[in-house]
Length: 86
Image (cartoon, rainbow, N blue to C red; front, side, top):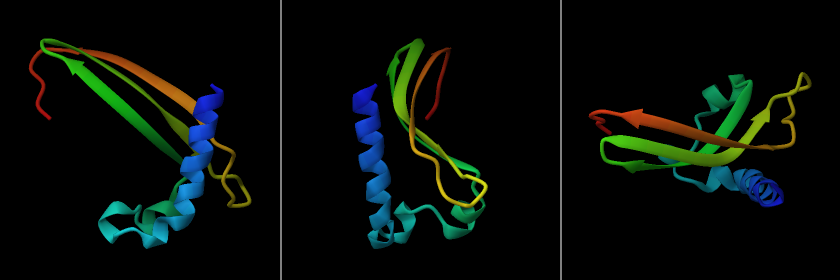
């Protein structure tokens, strides 16, 4: 869990440089201004007929004063079956 918090802190710090990114790789200002929260999750999916996906990431929420909460580490897991098109 400590490693996830370390990754989350570095991810949030990297968003200070988001203005330096190309426009197609940034979150549009209109969406970010109205967002109540933000989740950044990396997911890996494997399988043929039955698929499994697992991921980790961070979640932050907007406080009433407009600031962002400290990041919380999250994980996901899922199972799928049948034909899947990406």
